[in-house]
Image (cartoon, rainbow, N blue to C red; front, side, top):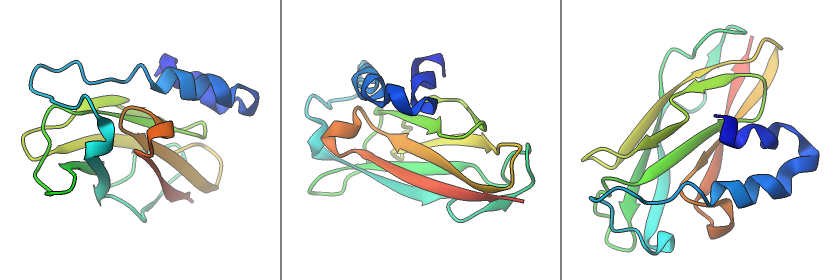
Length: 136
């Protein structure tokens, strides 16, 4: 998670984009030399609410498929980055044989909306999305 700590500081956003490029496809089972050939979708876990400082009831699960045929993509690294004071475990996951990667999201201590960035390779390549959860 230290790799992504700069995102929490709005003045350091440019640094984040450069750092996300480090999340690359080093797995021998991953043929993702061109990340635009992949699609990142939220498989489950969106729209949750939870108690401040506690993990959500369900993990955040994403699924990566190849574009345009939709086949499942194993071995693709995915990064999970909370924008608030919350945390995730693990922060980086390689997709399994079903193209899925999951993380447990612990919410911040302040009531409101927490936001989590889900990224495959770099934000600049269009392979990132946001998911939110309500902190009660």
